[in-house]
Image 1 (cartoon, rainbow, N blue to C red):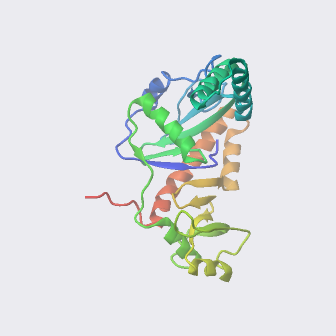
Image 2: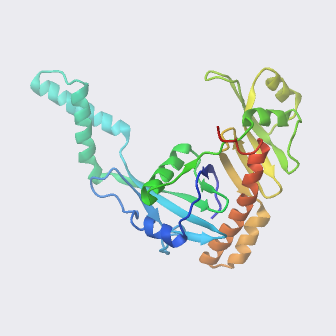
Image 3: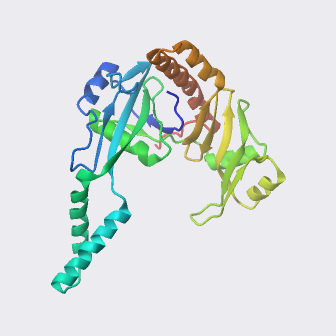
Length: 304
């Protein structure tokens, strides 16, 4: 189970639940499929898959969990069409206009009528807690999806004191300096892709792929005031990713040697391979994340 994206959270207080404690809490909020009138359902499932029952997988001092979401698929175009048909029928039969509030009520009625017959789609979101290091890592490409999991986890265990990591130096400025050849960390190799943006909501955006990021062309954009908000990097021959200014990570890929090591350790056994992959992945990330913070001056000091 190799994560492909990371939304990062730091604990502001120690996470003290054991694997058994966490298992007990999550067991009170298991995933249940949608009923006939449920638009969606969200709950905990076994990280190792449907053939396993534990909702918490412990390994390398870390705790992996997995949330499953099932939702009914009701295309907005279909709902709008049915609302229009029903509104026109009322206007013809009763000789009056159907205004917005009544249309909203019709929409709710139509949704309730359609839910029992609607198809469903399902997705899983994985996360793991590293109590000793004080991290919660969510394998999600968007903050919204990660926040859905963290909110449900907070509901499940009553308290989850986490915040996105804050660093001393502004990442966009530091990453821009890397392209100028300044202060590139020795264990960090720049890739061939980045996104530059002018400060401000209406600022222009330049996306570069398969490009020498230290070229004169890129430097001209930096001199014009643009800043690096995303950049492809490789760290210490362990992993590569697209790093964003908010410290979120996409297109995370671990080195082939790590993936092969996990496959060899599993030797065809799904449970053993899951254990090995999790141990290798968490060890690599436990080493990388402190370095990530150090790239930007370390954790930001708390306000006095």
